[in-house]
Image (tube, rainbow, N blue to C red; front, side, top):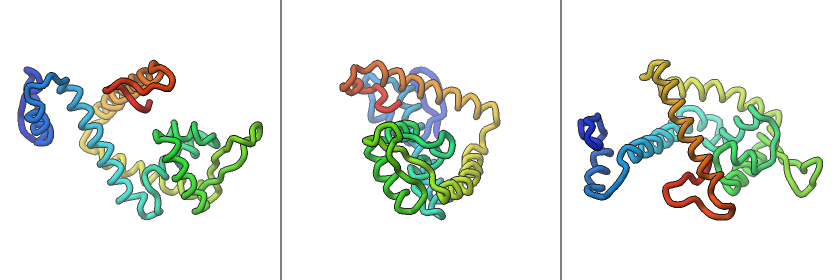
Amino acid sequence: MAWGFIGNEPVEITALERDIRARIGSYEADVYASGVMTNIYRVASILRNHMEREVLGEYGLSFTAFIALFTLWVWGDMEPQRLASKAGVTKGTLTGVVKTLERRGLCTRSAHPLDRRRAIVSLSGEGLRVVEKVAPLYNQEESRLVAGMDTDTQIALASSLRMIVATGAQLKASAPRGEAPAPGEAQDG
């Protein structure tokens, strides 16, 4: 860590943040927002890689596959579009994940009872067994990753991140249908 300035405020920054600040130079940029988003991205990448290496790999699961199984475990059977939304992936990504999980016998796809053109994705018995075994291990690793923070810090960080999620959802909802949000606006809520 190094000390630097963001705006006129002295703050502790990483070498990465210092390099970004040096590159941005005199460009007009919200360096506070950039610092937040850069670190969120880095944490997400660390989390994904750590979980695949330490927990999920042993069960042959990708991060996205586990999140899909976990989502079905928590909220039950659902249509692919809703599952993709809750899992935070595109419907296209989910299609490949569900096909892989189906081949492995961890989930099933069936026709919707009211409209056979639609599908329902469900956990299989084996999928239920796997997610019930993996979820506690996953949570243990979550605890290890935040072990340097006291409970109050964890609560404050979770609250701050929820504000970003809510803002992203509002931006997505306010974009005209069929149009992408303007640059800098959330793409997925």
